Structures are given as C-alpha cells and as structure tokens.
Amino acid sequence: MIERVKSAMVGLGATWVLLLMVVLSVVSLAIMLERAWLYWSLRDDAAALMRDLGRLLRGGDLEGARRRLETSPSAEAAVVIAGIVEAKMGHEAAEEAMAGASALQKLKLEKRLTFLGTVGNNAPFIGLLGTVIGIVGAFDELGKVKTSTLGGAAQVAPEAVMSNIAEALVATAVGLLVAIPAVAAFNMFQRVVRTTLSNTEALSHVLLAHLKATGDTGTSVEDAIETAARSADRPSKSG
Image (cartoon, rainbow, N blue to C red):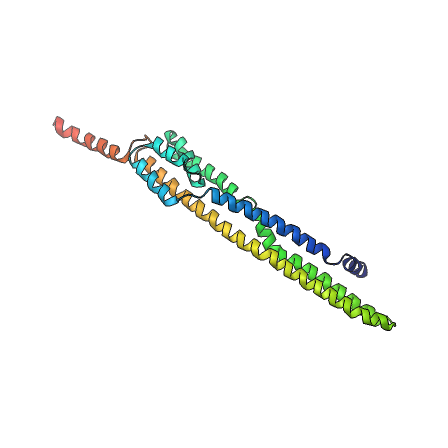
C-alpha cells in the first residue's frame, strides 16, 4: 500500500500542486479586485452623512432626510432609508426594517471573503504537500542509487535528487506567495466591513432616537417640546 502511494506521488510529482496554486492565486486576485472596486464604489463620508441626517431630522424634515440619503451610494444610507420607509409604522417597525436591511448589506459586503480566508489559511499547507512530494521523490532517487550497481546511475541520481528538492522548495515558496496577499486582503476587507456596519449602527440610532423622541409622529423634537409646553399652560389660564 505504501509503495503504491509512493509510486503515485513520485509519478505525478509536484507539478499539479504548482498548477493548483497558480489557479488559486488568479482566482484570489480576481476576488481582491472585485471586492476593492465594490468597497470603493460604496464609499462616502459617514461623518458628514450623520451630521446632515441629524440636522434634517431635528428640523422635522423626514422626506428631506430620505432624499439626502438617496444621494449616497453607501451601504449605511441604504439601511437607514429602509428605516425611514417604515417610520410611519413606529420606531419598532423602523428598527426591524433596518435590522433586515443591515443583514442584507452585511451579506453583500462579506460575499466571497470566505474564499480569501480559506486560501490564506490553506495555501501554505498545499505548498507543504508539494514539498512532501518533492522530498519523497528525492529519497526515492537516493534509494535507486543504493540498489543500483551501475556507476552511471550513481552519477545521474544526484541530479535527480537536487531537482526534486528544488521542486519541493518552489512549492513551499509558491504556497507562501499565494497565502500572504490573500490573508492581507482578507483582514483589510474585514476591517472595511466592520467599519461600515459600525457606521450603519450609528446612523440607525440617530433615526431611532428621533422617532422615539417625537413619538413616531414625524414631528420635530422642538415641536414636541412646544406642544408639551402649551398643554402645561392651559390649566393655569383656565384657572
């Protein structure tokens, strides 16, 4: 059994491992470029967006806030728009709508990142497999030297041994070259996703605070305070 496995490994060599690593590197690069383009297209100034949203909500201009958010390509704006659409149904409905929209945006942002993480974690092991195959081939050549009685074979064998060792080292190097960019891109993209989700939560709380303060009626905080003040003055005037 062991001899059959060894013969299969030596016969195939590590070339197929190198080809697999090349395919994985090409796919990883394509995903990196696609994700980078997506995040770039969704970029916006979250701080300015929050200031504008707060200003419009304090003025009671819910439709104006919606129009301002619709001008933003960001995932944060898409989530808060979902809450504004359901604002008339109450702050609980708006909160649920934003939670659902946030989940969809998270799926969109994290799409294909699992592949990058998997490649980054496993590419060194694939390269190690190629290394093991190369070392097995090298030892197989050394075994042939010991069992051979021909001097010519003894001269050729060291070259074959060096070739197998070199192939093994190349497999390890390629595995690392594929893994390092994949891990770096995965970590960077995960940070972008976390930042986006944090900004989304902050903007959502701005809208929810407005809806709760106004009693979900869509009136401004200032109008609510003025109405409460008028209600408090009526008994004194009648008395």
